[in-house]
Image (cartoon, rainbow, N blue to C red; front, side, top):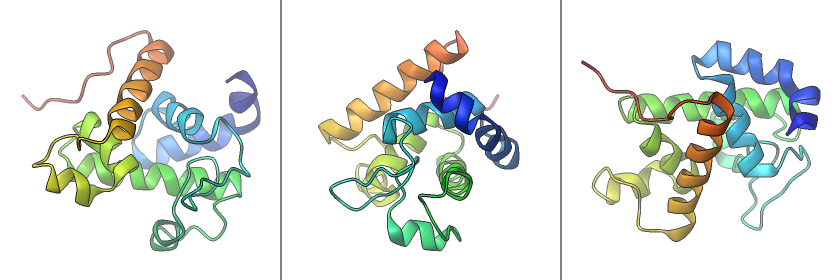
Amino acid sequence: MADTVRVHGRAIEAAARETGLEPELVLAVILQESGGNARAVSPRGARGLMQLMPATARELGVRDPHDPQDGIRGGARYLAQMRERYDGDLTLALAAYNAGPGNVDRAGGNVPPFRETQQYVARITDMLHRLTGAAAAPREDS
């Protein structure tokens, strides 16, 4: 984690400011998605630090998901879009980031019943809690 912050901290901070996300959240997603490896490629074809699928990267205007600044900016933008789509609910935003918003919608606006997605949400929530020292509960409107 320290290496990821040292190498990519400025890009993480910039993307967080640009999207209104917490830098710790962006870092937690990077660590979970790629372990901080900008050259990472998943078996399904997701690429870069934030593991963007090629079609999603194109939609977000990301030219090279392996470029740390471009990939972090695009991944943060996508995560912010998911958070907005689900009215600030971080749990659903993370589930949509991992499984796609269509799967969250098909699950009735809940975390889909996929073990991978359920573990993903739990891991990032736990990591975010450790990084911030506070509960990483979804935002609630009064």
